[in-house]
Image (tube, rainbow, N blue to C red; front, side, top):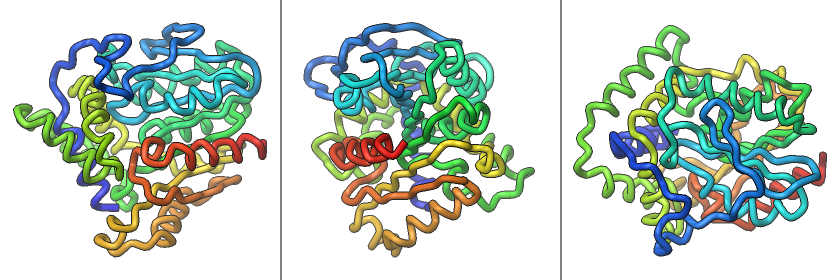
Length: 311
């Protein structure tokens, strides 16, 4: 868990101070930047929402830190033919204008508004990393309106910080943000690639493309989200979640052997951080790193399908 924490700090420290607005689609060389045209596009409190498909039990797809709709395009293609799929882009990410004020709290409120104002019928919230934490938060805030939560390598507390005392958490979070803001930017692109190669993906052929996409996010916004995330512990509210919860845990044997962590140990650690969740399923995604939807798209989609069939 400590390794994941340190690599996440390295990721954040590599992002540019001023990211240019992202075009609708990046150059054709980046195969993951192209995305399906939505049926509808609108904003809620600065959060971009793109709807694909209609009917059925809705899905709300929430990307993680420094990510955009490109993170979920495989699930959009697989599921939008049978149901409404809403993909959000948080302020400051993927070329969106940076947020004003605490971004995580604003994103939490915007997601609640999306569910309530659009009268979504028991949607399933699907989040990656930071998006998973937001899914837990919204499911706690409006438990009667949420039909399910799927978190891909996202937890209610940031791994490596779970033992911090409440009074230590904001101090540590502010320190991390200061380190991020002070980091030189000249080598950010190469460092970002290294993160993707060493922690983000098993498939090295995809690392450079995803690194380029992550670099479209605003560095200051990334720091603000990270500070708030590191200062947050959602574990006390887990018993409030009324909906079933599925947590998908990427696992790559060579990494685990180096860290002396077995698959069972990692699963049990995640379960310990989710203690108190009333309806919890924790499943591994073998041969995958943090961006498991790119390493093992079939396995992730199959897990989502099984979960939806159980509802």
